[in-house]
Image 1 (cartoon, rainbow, N blue to C red):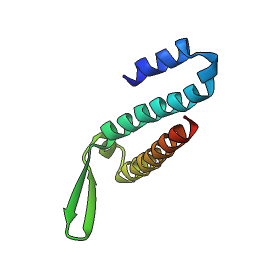
Image 2 (cartoon, rainbow, N blue to C red; image 1 turned 90 degrees about the vertical axis):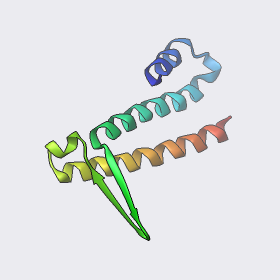
Image 3 (cartoon, rainbow, N blue to C red; image 1 turned 120 degrees about the vertical axis):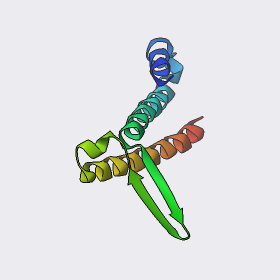
Image 4 (cartoon, one colour; image 1 turned 90 degrees about the horizontal axis):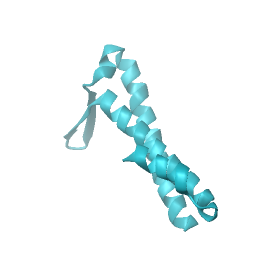
Length: 93
């Protein structure tokens, strides 16, 4: 759906909405990036009282455990950017 959203944004955005379409396109690209990271990580979250543990069980393990940690941090940054874009889009409207 994100690829379709990008196609619609690129082809049929009116000039009055050009600034807002940049925010929408960035959100769609960011979502595609997050989906790719989720597929590479296949992460599991374990909760035991106040302790939170995370385990990656995806294809990133074929590279290294450190690579999985880096991808997980990229996922966190991407989620923070998505939350910021949502706040900005509500403010912009």
